[in-house]
Image 1: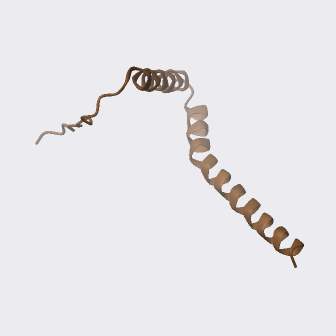
Image 2 (image 1 turned 45 degrees about the horizontal axis):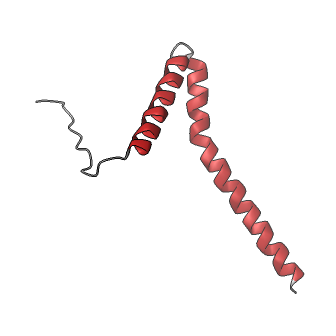
Image 3 (image 1 turned 90 degrees about the horizontal axis):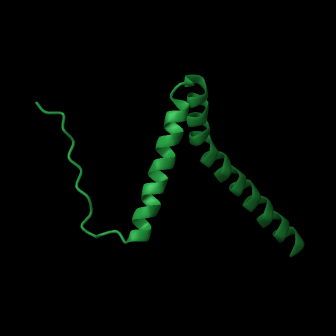
Amino acid sequence: MSDEVKIELGSVPLDELKAERVRKLAQLVLAEERRLMNRPVYRGAVRGWRAVEPLLLAAACIVYLTWAVSFASKIYQ
């Protein structure tokens, strides 16, 4: 049994600017992974923060919107 994974790329060609952006982003991610390779504790902390950061941002937005709606309703009463 073969464990090969075949990935088919989209048929829409990328323009040069988009291709350059994707290439630079891939290089940045690779450079960061290389930098973190020798520091397993720090690597775990960075990956944990990447998982928690969006949740904290979403929670802050919900708290702010709740406060803004309740504050606005108190003003208009």
